[in-house]
Length: 481
Ligand SMILES: *Cc1c(COP(=O)(O)O)cnc(C)c1O
Image (cartoon, rainbow, N blue to C red; front, top):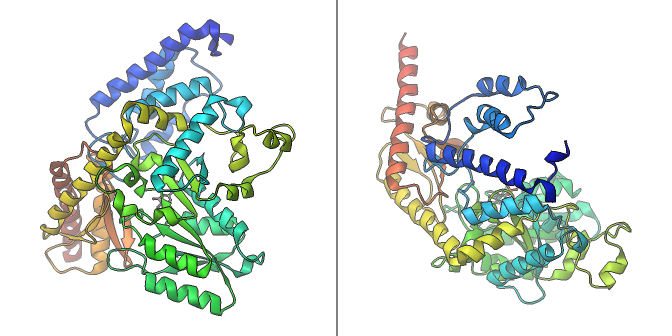
């Protein structure tokens, strides 16, 4: 069994196994004609259930053969130009190479004595990102597992910096389009259900600052404490950006922590043409960035950045066995002092490899391409009588719904759109997402693949319309008979 351990004596077997795996994935990628096979849970579950985990196959080729059956064949492929579902990006090769290196070396970024240079690479990338945000030299941050964790940590810092210890008095303000992890974080931080005040959005799905000002005023009048305002720079559904400069001013006036959730919009930090959309982000006390969304990085790769690095002390605990106080005094860089995690992946390496291979402009141009594509998609939708589209895109999502010619009830239109999405998924021809707005069922394209064309968008719109028409047609027949 020692032959399976990766070390000096097994380097050749490592090379062979990994190469074989890479070969399989490479031919899979080349042969994929649809983003998905359309397999259902009932198709896949038996394949996985029948694997006897207590009887290993022993041999890489056999395991890869089996993997083809239980996973690779029916996986959802984000690299396919007709995957238009969630905020998943196709990944860039330098980052995938980074992933292979980091898992083989297996550094853990909690302490210097488990990572050495890895720690310094992560720190350089945090400083680099902080520079892009427009922060000064006091800034700091740390890589996290994702935007949800970054938001949680940001709100933890905000809670600790708040001007009261009476948790029941703390309020968080975020728009009705903000990410659900804000609510979840409030719950985890012991703030209770009424802690998050939802601020309405305008027609373009941006937080209404007049409403925010009113809510902050009311909070003060009620004797409560405005703990934080979360501005979303790129809402998950609409890609809309809250007005950062105005929100920054209000935070300043009311003494609230200003957090910018740029999990999606962080790609603008490297955009050669759109960086100005993030103007005002430099005033934020903390920023969430998800490199695994708009930097074309494999999951996971994310970070929280803070304007004042000393606030990260609220996440610090000293353990004698790991990061004793003495180590901090000796200025040994132990990243665990800043993180909610202990053992932690060297995700930063993927971004490092990407920047060293393609450069920031390379990533930013890819993000620009998908934002341009969204504008083309919007034009198609706006000109198409079969569809209603909600807002003109700022980033790269489109929220729309199929509207039939004939008069039907709103509930029936909802069902037709739901049906179309499911039928499309089951066909595997394309993958789109769904969401609700104004209480009604909508569909969503998240465009993160520069290989997707306007032709793909037009073709998928035809497919959706076909499914919706089929649903409505069948139901008419039902109603008549
Ligand atoms: C995706 C997203 C998150 C959550 O990030 P994860 O990496 O999925 O945890 C938070 N905020 C916004 C605006 C997002 O789009």
